[in-house]
Amino acid sequence: QVQLVESGGGSVQAGGSLRLSCAASGYTYRSSCMGWFRQAPGKERERVASIASAGSTNYADSVKGRFTISQDNASNTLYLQMDSLKPEDSAIYYCGATSPVSPYFGGSRYCLTRSNLFRYWGQGTQVTISS
Image (cartoon, rainbow, N blue to C red; front, side):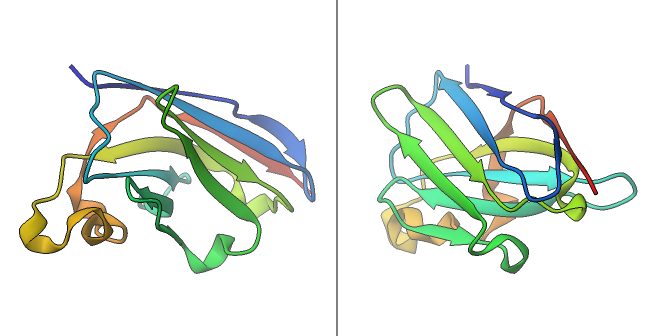
């Protein structure tokens, strides 16, 4: 049974930083992707950043240059370092993961930008940025 548990959310002022963590258990991170998504009140959930098991990363335009996604395979933990935070970054942040991607589709790079492939989700952590 796959479990994803986020931590590290909180409230900071604009310009500040936060680091989110996602501890994964029961999950085999091979030929697959993990990522961070967020959902603000009244808005749809959007992908923030994703990382393939092979190491490639992809970011939403709104966070490029400010957020960094990384993984620690030894501890099965996903991170999101968020710098230069803006009030519009306020949202509930979710950790997500995909099932393994068939080699027919080229492996883990296939799932980097395909949000519909993410099937495992954490409970979310609140991030609030004040101006």
